[in-house]
Amino acid sequence: MIVESQVATGRIASVNPATGEVLGQIEVAGEAKVLAAVARAREAQPGWHGVGVRARIDALRKFQRLVHEQKTEIARQITLESGKPVAEALTTEVLVVLDAARFLIENAYRLLRDEPVPHGNPAARTKSGKIVREPHGVIGIISPWNYPFAIPATESLAALVAGNSVVLKPSELTTLTAVRLLELLRAAGVPEPVFQLVPGLGATGAALVHSEIDKLVFTGSIATGKRIAQEAASRLLPVVLELGGKDPMLVLDDADIDVASSGAVWGAFVNAGQACLSVERCYVARKLHDAFLDACVNKTKQLRVGDGLNPKTEIGPLINQKQLRTVESHVEDAISRGARLLCGGRRLSELGSNFYAPAVLADVTHEMRIMKEETFGPVLPIQAFDNDDEAIALANHSEFGLAASVWTKDRQRGERIARRIRAGTVMINDVISCYGISEAPHGGVRSSGIGRTHGRYGLEEMVRIKYLDQERLPGMKRVWWYGYGENFSHQMQGFVDALFAGRLSDRVVGALRALPSLTRKRL
Image (tube, rainbow, N blue to C red; front, side, top):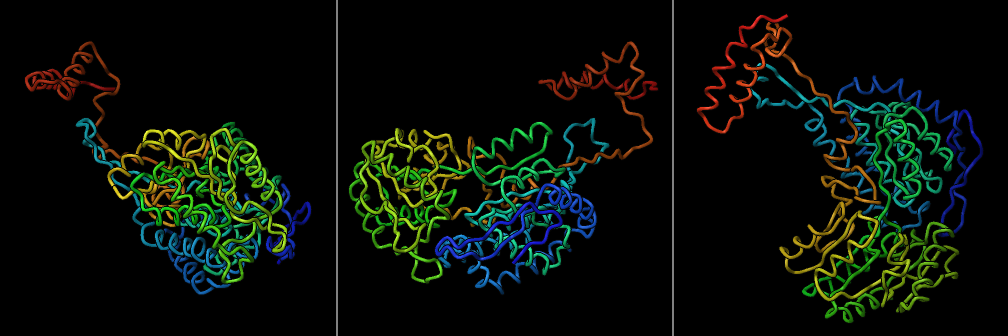
C-alpha cells in the first residue's frame, strides 16, 4: 500500500519485526507536502466545525462500528507492523479505541456545549455569562510505533469530534497501521482534507512542527519533546507532550505475592516492555522480597516468546535492532555494577533478529542505568525496601512522573502512599490498564510531559475556552465608567465595604455611601 504525495523525498519500508518481511513501501512527505496538507486542513476545518457536534458524533459512531466489524483484520495489521501478540493488539489497541469512541459518543455533546457562568459579584448581576468551547483549528499529531493504532486514534477522535481538522505524522515504523486508521475514518464520513497523513522520518515531523498548525500533540522521547517545546515556545504554540516514563511498582509488606508478582510480570513484559506505562522499576518490602523474586522468576520462565501471529505467543519481538541494543546495554550495565540476572537477558536468535528473552534482575541500585533511564524492553529490575517512606522516596527518585502502582491489601494505606508519589497516574493493585479507561486522563509530570489526553481533560485540550459576557440592561451606563467626580472615590470605598466588610453594620454604612454613584452623571 502506498500513500500518494505531491512532493516526496524518498520512500520508507514497513517491516515486520518478527520476520524481517517488507510489508509495503510508503512515500515520504517532504516539507512542501506537509505545508500543503496543513493548508488544506485549515481550509476544510470551518466546514467540519459547521456541521455541528451531533453530526461529528455520528461519524464517530460509524467509525466505531467499522472498527468492531474489522477488529480481526485491524489487530493482524497491528501485529504485522509492531510485533505484539495479536491478543494484545485486540485488548490494548482495538478495544481501547472502541471504548474511546464510546466515551466521546456518549459525552462529547455535553462536554462541548456552552456552559453558563453564574456571577457572585453583585456588580455583575445584570450580566449573563457563558463559556464557549471552540476548536483550535488544525491539530498536528505526531504518534509513536509502540501503540500505532490506539495512540493516534484516541487523540484524533477527540480532536475531530471537537471540530478540528487533523494532520497526523505516524511513526515511520508503523505507517501502514496509520493508513488503516485513515481508511476507517474516510469510510465513516470524515472528509478527506479534515484528516490527513504525512508519512516520513524526523524531517517530516519537524516540518509539521514548523508549519502553521494551531496545536501539537506529541508522543515520543524526552529529547525530541524538549526540542519541540523550545520551538513551540518561540511562537506560543500550545502543545501536549507525552514523553515516556520509568514507572515504579511498590509492593508493600501486606501485598498478595501471587497477585502482585503476576501484575509485575505482565506489567514489565506486555508489548515486550515497549509501553510508556511499563513497570520499569519494582520495589518490594524486604520481608516479601525473596518469595516475590522467586514467583516472578518462575512465572517469567513460563512465558512463550515468538511471532505475535501465533496465538500461543505471549511476548513478541522488539521493534528493531536499535531498541534491542538499548535493552542489552541496560542489562549489561546493571550486571557490571553488581546486579544478578536471574533469568532471560539474552538474544533469541533462533527465533529472529529482534527477539529477547524476558529478564528478571535482582540487587539493582539507582547507580545503574536500568533504574534511571527508560529501558523500553522486557526487563524487570527488583529492589528491596525497609519501610513505606523509603519506598516512596525510591519511587520519586526519578526525572520521570508518568505513572506508578502500589500493591497492598489495605486500600486506605495504598491511597495514602499513592497521594505521595509524584506521577500523573497511580494505580492501586493494578498496572497499565489505566490507559484503557476512557474516562481517565492520561499524562505525566516532570520529564514525562505536559498536558493530558483521554476523557474530559483530553477533550478540553482540543478546544479553546472563550468567555462570552452579555449585559442584560444594554441601555444603562456602567457605574464605573468615566465621569468620576470628586466624590467618586469615596463612593467606591463604600461600595467595596458593602461587599466585603467583615461586620454587617460596616456593610450597611458602605452601601449608603455608595448609593449616590448610581445617579452620578457619566460620560
